[in-house]
Amino acid sequence: MREILSNIERHSQLSLIRTADEILQEKQNRQVGILLGSEGGKLIIHNLENLQRLYELGLRHVMLTWAFNNQISAVELDSSGQGLTDFDRQVVVEMNRLGMIIDVTHLARPAMREVIELSIRPILNSHTTLKSITIVFPLSVPTRFSFWPIAAE
Image 1 (cartoon, rainbow, N blue to C red):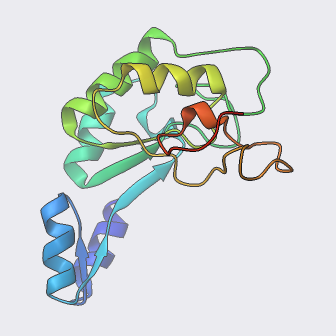
Image 2 (tube, one colour):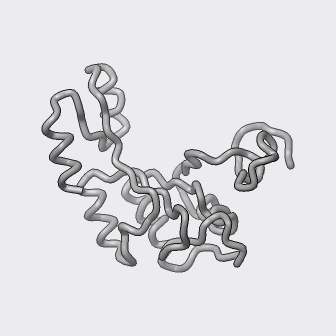
């Protein structure tokens, strides 16, 4: 991660984005803003202090899981019905406290439901379709997870 940060610092047209205000500022300055994120929560490694350290380094977006089950949750194709563990809930609460973006893409549906219920801040589903829009794609999210006024499944 430090190598990524030094690469950003080396280029005058790049800027590390840490706050929403910085997005607007860099757009106004015609700079390229970099918002650091992680696909899969494996960087946390069962330790909330790691999440704090990553935040201090500039990480602002975490997709809680990706292609495989990890210490935070099961993936969307997991049929075990696994939701969040106590540690997972602590991750969500800490990410809320820090103001980080929680991305529920690829989460098992029971875990996604729990994150939506637990989070006190908006969450992100960065790249999953809704079943009511794309019926043929098996990993589509049920429409009830949408905040858009779309007809129910």
